[in-house]
Image (cartoon, rainbow, N blue to C red; front, top):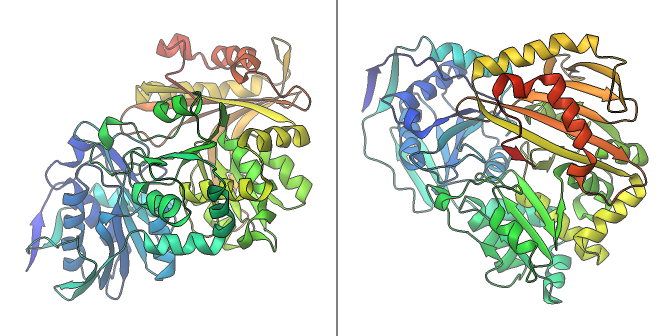
Length: 539
């Protein structure tokens, strides 16, 4: 039943911050998936006795790739696979299953917030036993394997039926098909006060949750409508589709336009939220009101004592360097640990495992806690609902009162997409070399106090990581530049701009950041080098 198949390497299988992401047309090439998976198995080594979790967000080619992974796992000696029914598993649900079953790792087939379908993107996230992203040292080893691979092992056997929950076996490997949603729901019920949230809906509270035709649709229907009692129809776009119904499953003001338009209409619900393709990102809205991910992290941290699972206290909080400084002020007020890390969820894992932090978040609509080792979209939505149920206040009230207490960080991210990779690398290198000469210079009344690369020293293992470039001003404003690692083609340069005010809290963010945006563009020379005078995406 086991075949050893000769193959030739591909040169483009280097993983980004959250796994391998490529265009679907690339992934369906002969032996592309097989080469990548065999390289992972080669790096792991002896697979006897090992258990892995497998699932995906339902995007195009998931079904075929999962069957390949099953057959290759059996051929390489894996002892057990735990697979979500019909091949579905959100990223946070997969992390939970890895931890709950003490599995050795998992494979979540998703390109996260990127579009799906034959013309879209495909991805594979490889998690280790922590339920979180693997360290860079391991992903580097896998990449080196992909460059020299010459053969792979696979079982020559029929496809496995993934539609029925239960046990199967091929070539001595046990396969457990599980309810994709149940374990995750059980975990959420242990964290949040479902009774209070249910009472909120019984009083007439309304919500609109947009699953964006992605994997969290079944999770959201079961939790919000079936268990908590939100009116039927509160969850929209709930059926996972291979191409996400043509939607770009990224929960932000640009791509979740259907939800945004509804929440800014006369018929708006009391609360609005959306998740991305694999369920690890979230967007929070109130009536005619948007909560930035940076503010959301700060507000959740400030209200941890309203959540049953955290009432005994939290260790601390961490944010990515690009995320606004809002949560830093909350951490100081509560006298808890505070850390700033590079972009990439794997940098939070050591802090969680060493009991340094409980909450963490990134500006790219990702928030989570130590209940798993990934960001968790529905967790964030339930946290907000729990706060609303306990306080009786609206989203806008909660956020405005937070600004009145701590001040407001006006904060916007500008994405410049589809830039030639070599051009983007050169631009960032030249910008880094320019930083030492900027200190003390004044632009539009803003004086630069510090300009340098962001370098993170992990307090647990002592490793060092450079990630992005930061310019700080005397008044506390910041400009951060970094290359994104989540695209499937070309490069994306991101500029994050922040301006803090203690008293002036009700202005339009773009208006408040106009001059800082001009400074950021001038210093980076993006218009001259790329031809782009405006960002492709503003969030």
